Length: 242
Image 1 (cartoon, rainbow, N blue to C red):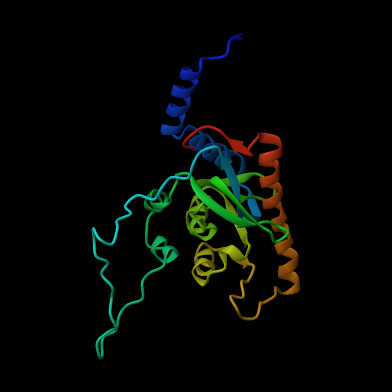
Image 2: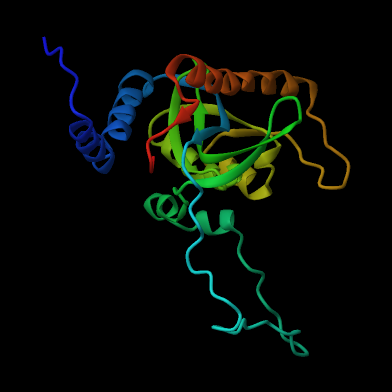
């Protein structure tokens, strides 16, 4: 039995090699397909959680002063001109492949903010871990992004990853994922979406009684996030560049 701990440089090289080869992602995918691939899962609970890191947020590249480059502003449309509305991030993702979507998601250290279960807003430096958790409490798909990435931008890639691994009936999401595009996407995968409505200045649409009872199953996502931090040390990371 090897009792001596490896040197810091040796561990750093091994860690970099594992990360570059995506060893953890490939092992996780293989285990999910082996143990849950033939099981019908009732609910997939989707949520993102803060991952704090002891490093400074990465500055956004490509900031150019107005003196160096003039900003071209679009004027009013001409008479009879019809302009196509600019596609949203989710709308673009629906026409892209999974590798392209993952490549466009920022993975650098950033500044994020999120409302907790009590409604208070918390801010942090670091990253955000997005999980799709099954009824048994096991995450079937996971994505690590910059803390500044909105939860809704990871719904499409998470659902595509999960659909290739397991079969589920319901997709449970909170108000951060409230979008007609995400609802139609979930239905297109053969799932029943239950998304908490975000009123956006209007009147909030409540769930039907049977839907509200199913939506309560989404607490599994919060328990999975809590277990990740309490039992597996996912609270603060001091390694640069997760």
